Image (tube, rainbow, N blue to C red; front, side, top):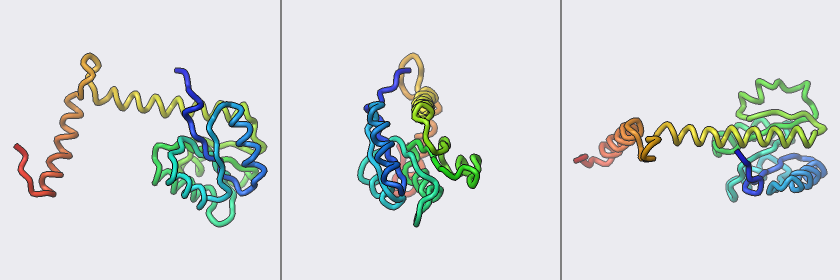
Amino acid sequence: MAIDKTKEAILVVDDDQRVCEVLEELLGALQFSVASALSGAEALKMLKEKPYTFILADVRMPEMDGMALIRRSRADFPGVCIIAMTGYAEEYKYVDIINAGANDFLKKPIDIAELEAKIVRCISERDLKRVLSRLSITDSLTGLFNQRQFYMRLGEEIVRSKRRSIHLL
C-alpha cells in the first residue's frame, strides 16, 4: 500500500526550538507537511485549529509534560498517531508511554531513518484499521451496509427515538 506523505500533517512538540527546527526540516525533506509547537498547551490549541494526522511529542517538557499531552490528545483526537520522544529514556518505561496512548517511542538523538520507518508503520496500521472497520460493516459483493451494521444503527435509532419521545414506524 503506497503512502502519500504529502497528505500527512505532523505536529512536532518540543520545548527546545532547535529540535523543532531540525525535525521540521528533516520531515519536510521527506515530503511531510510539518508544523511545531514549543509546549503541550500550544500543541492542543493547534490541534483544535487544524487536523493533524501525527504528533511527535517530547516527553519531558515544562508545565504540561509529554505524557499529559499524549493522554489529552488521545482523548480529544483519537484518530491521531502519536510518537513520544525523549533524551531521558532511562526515566520512562516503554509500557507507560504506550499505556498513556502513544503508538510508539523514540530515543533522542533521533535517527531520521528510524523515525520515518515508525511513521510509515503507524500510518499503515491506521489505514489498515480503517479498511478492516469498513469491511466489518459492509457486504463485500454489493458494498452496502451488512446485517451487523443494520442492527447497530437500529439500536442507536431506538435509543434516539426514546430520548426524543418519537415512535419508530
